[in-house]
Image: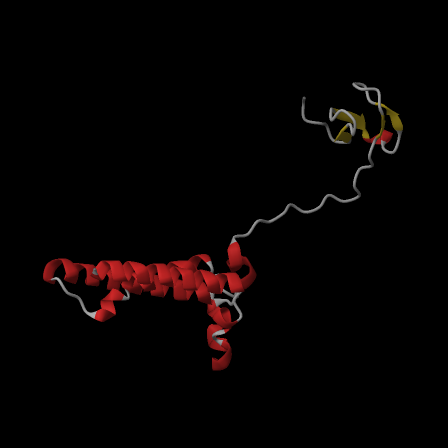
Length: 166
């Protein structure tokens, strides 16, 4: 079927589903479907076409850029990866590691969970303008699902840390 010309109304027949085309001047009229014979009413043309939907990604749209939770996630993931690397390197070369470096996998997984589940959408750029007692709202007011994901990710990292030692 060709694309309809301006002023053409295209709609499916409610009975057979076949696309029907009518001129805008036939809006509101009733008649038989040319394919199944059932009675159809030509719909009216909407007065205004709605603006196209804008699709935005995650909490950045609500918060206006990088969120505090995602910023913390980036920092914790990088630190966790560094600790994990140092700890694994020490274990392979000397057979032991400092307890601090065993936390690497747990930090890494927790940081990654923060990137996926960033908590309450609080713009990172606005943190300096908030009073000190309100800067933790991204975590304290986070949805329960986000907090649960943080705990699970930390526990997975902890299990990996324990396996790294044994």
